[in-house]
Image 1 (cartoon, helix red, strand yellow):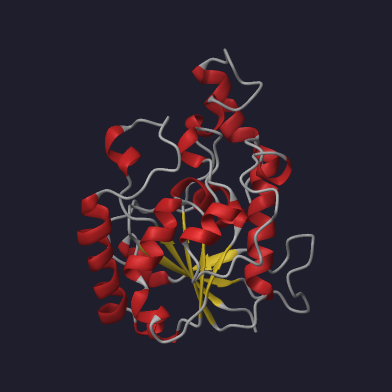
Image 2 (cartoon, rainbow, N blue to C red):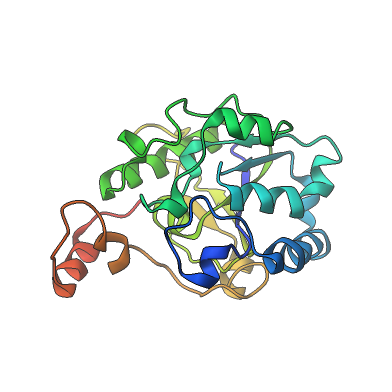
Length: 252
């Protein structure tokens, strides 16, 4: 049986406040690391009984997601719940904020995390990790297929707003908010390469409330103009042309 997935966006990071996208792999702000992570931890434990059944944590290998997982899910790791880093969960762009650090640095600084599933080309932004619509959709499918194949029953995933919206679930997330999903039930299919059984379907409760904290925008969200604006090949395109790309490009 496919696992239930709790998607969590990282807490407030420095670039979320400064809008400076030249910062390399920015950390959380003090507010994000303390107040938001504390609230996230408390609310998961108090208002989501499912959270006590989490038997795996999967995290994007960026500083802001690693810090969020460490500060808000430490009550799980204290019980021996494993944390696995997965390159497929990294954010979308080639801006400095979305480029990670070498794996050897990460393993040194985060020795309690399992790095064995990491793609060795990380932090390269080539191939599956390229900043293109095709690559983002393929990466989203790869991440969902990996999650669906896991034997655990409840998996917490700590990731990024852009990639989760485009590649995983077509939903928006406020900082340090979460949503709960099941994999679609397709008779006779176990997550085949054609995508059957890989679609995530949100729980009615978090969909209706706008996330677990109720701070996230409600609705279904596909491509947006800013997703395409800085992609290679789109330089000089008008807003109308970019809007047409949003409409004409397939979703997950």
